[in-house]
Structures are given as C-alpha cells and as structure tokens.
Amino acid sequence: MRRAAWLLVLAALYAACIAVVQPDLPRLWAGLPRLAHWLAGAFPPDFSGLPDLLRRAAETVAIATLGTSLAALLALPLALMAARPVAPIPALYHPARALLDALRGIDGFVFALIFVAAVGLGPFAGMLGVALHSAGSIAKLWSEALETADPAPVEAALSAGGSRAQAAAVILLPETLPQTLSALLYVWEFNIRASTVLGLVGAGGLGQELKNAVDLLDFARVLAILIIVIALVLAADRLSATLRRRLA
Image (cartoon, rainbow, N blue to C red; front, side, top):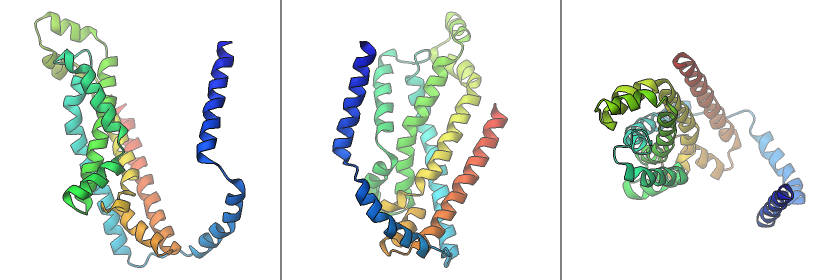
C-alpha cells in the first residue's frame, strides 16, 4: 500500500509537470525543418576576428578562476561554522547551513545579473556572481568532508584542552586536504562551463559574443563560438581530472 501510494504521488507530480510545461510534439516536429536550415547555414564555422574570440575565452577562464578563488576564501569560515565537529559557535550551525543553501539556491547567472546592475557591465560583475554562488557549493562540500572525517583525533585534541579552531587547523583541515582540493577543482571546472553564458547578461566572457551572434541569426559565428566553448570545457575537464588523480 505504501509503495502504491508513492507511485500515485509520483504519477500526480508528473501529471502536474506535464500540465504546466504542455509538451507539444507537433510543434516540435514543425520546427525541425527551421532548425535544420539554421544548422545547414552554420557550416563552415566563422572564425573571423579570432583574436576577439580568444580574448573573450580568456575572460571566461579568468572569471571562473578568480571567482572560484574568491569563493574558496569565503567558503572556509562558512564550512567551519557548518561542520558540527569543529563549529566554533554551535548555535551558528543551523544559520550557517541555511546561508549555504541560500547561496547555492541562487544561480550564479542571477547573482551576475544583480552585480551588473550594481557595478556595471563587464567580467568583474561575472566574477562576483560566480564567487557568491560557488561559495555556497564549496562550503557545503568542505563541511561534509569535515563532518565525515575520523572524529577520534579531534576528540583527543579537545580532551587535551585544545579549542575547536585549533583542532580544525591542526587536524581536520590537513586530514581532509585531498578531498577539499578535489572539490575545489570540480567547482572550478563547473565554473568554466557556467561562465561561458554570463555574457548573456553583460557580465563578459564568450556569452557576450554568443548573444550577439544569436541576435543576428549568424549561426556560422554561433558554431565557431560553441567550438571554442567545447574546447575550453574539455581542456578544463582534462586538467581537473589529472590534478584530482594526483591528489587521490
């Protein structure tokens, strides 16, 4: 009976989602020829003005790298407050967890849009947007690594009169360093992908060129930009995977 009830709930959820989204297969079928026409017009890709595209690609990498680094600085105190074994003020544990959820719940794209309004157009706004969203993700991963570490050394340090901050600095952080660095590299790799679209709101990077090309229906240019995006993502993925293997 319980399983049947869960299946009914799941069916009701899907029915509600379908009612909201209203999938229309005939409309998709009718739009396929238009899509095929655009794809046919995208060949060969237009790499004219390649230096400008490479400059935008460098902006994308810089936004992701600086944003992730700033996020790590913000995440460290948040992770310590959100990890039960070493939380310096236990009463802040749940508020810290709520803050992490809030930062992760607001997408970096939304943060970038807000910062564009606050500091103006350009990659600086994108970097700030990436940093705030990523701080929540990094702190969440780091706090979980701290909580799942072997508690015995921490308990011994506390029994010997050490503070929670000392136990974290001397024992837990060095012990969990491979996991925390691996998580940081994973978030950096994700931010490379995410930063490619921040230009859609004026936050710099390849997204700005992509938006201009789509607005002009210049699909040969769109394809060239997408090729560069894929190359960036593949390079970041390979580099991140190599470094994570060395940390393991």
